[in-house]
Image (cartoon, rainbow, N blue to C red; front, side, top):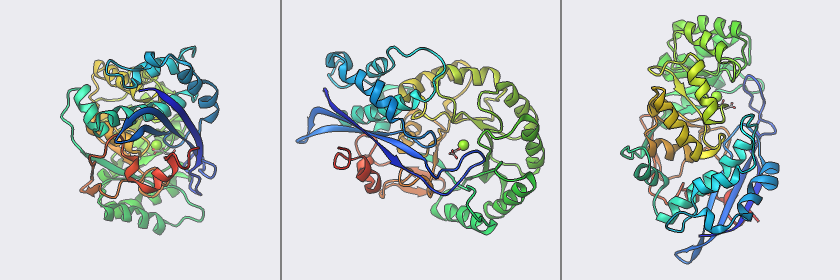
Length: 388
Ligand SMILES: O=C([O-])CC(=O)C(=O)O
Ligand SMILES: [Mg+2]
């Protein structure tokens, strides 16, 4: 199998919503197609990927560094023993001549191509990605029924609490049993009113997570933790600045509710610092590193090994990003579950029409690869017709 072409485009996922820190009016993703000369059922295989949500498209880094390195490499140096493109060998090529540390958003560019390479690897075997992962890696039994929660509850222009309630109720009606909403974009007293309105819909704190998107200083994070204590919430996400591990440790020690974080941690070594110094508890807290944002599944497998050596089970991992790739990782690597975006960041959060959602679990089907072909609204964007 040889790469014949890698096509990359920027796609808008802009919308009027905002979290505590950014609005999404100009949000974009990078979509890629890795085309090959490997013919299956009369057609050359193509792998598809996109850059998750939240860090904008990475076209510059893709076009100037990552894609040219792959295209310039000796094709024989990029394949495994069976002749199929090897995501690990491709990874080494993609990061050649990149200095350690810093990371910036090149990790997003690498993660985007990595997603397409895993799509290809599974398609070459004619199996859904989660089956390939379960067979090759962490020795878990594949479980296509993945626990998901509905992330939404953003701040909208002119928002009313009834609108928030209607949104969260619609998620429960779809079959989700847990939802997440934003905090930190309004004064504490207003956020408490919003949380109480949400609790009136969920019926209990264990079905409601809150996400501050790293907005708070430690004092504010602690004030929110104190005020939210009576609610028994599912988790308190990204309370403080992403790399302020000492600050996070202070909040985690005082919060008396689970902490969730990691969506803006982009490498195995930064994740190691998080679990070394962030004061998190492997018995109750959650890790949300998103492989598409953080150097791909090749790096995520290293992260899972590192976590295990620090006493963290993969069952504490719930990746950010609400994408199909995350669902396959959860199903094939024994993660606790995955985020879902039923109504935001359209269309990339969609499930395939033949996937069933009930009692908080969505069930993957047996489409080869990641299965973007089965979701019309996504495939129209990713497919070779629009990517030219
Ligand atoms: O608002 C965002 O950037 C998305 C986010 O934090 C999440 O999905 O947890
Ligand atoms: Mg978040």
